[in-house]
Length: 62
Image 1 (cartoon, rainbow, N blue to C red):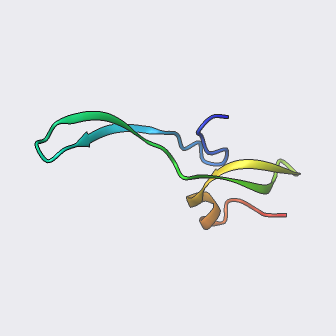
Image 2 (image 1 turned 45 degrees about the vertical axis):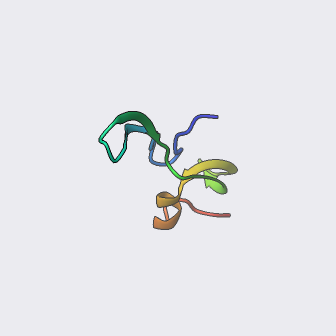
């Protein structure tokens, strides 16, 4: 299961952990994905959608 929103296509991004001494280590920013039952292509399916899509009304619940 990929960490990608099926509505908007949001994926993980990369950045840095920055310590107080400004040491940099790579990290991942994952999208906040939720498994939700939604009408997708005319059928009721369980999809992975980010919370921004759910809150904005792009996900139509059955």
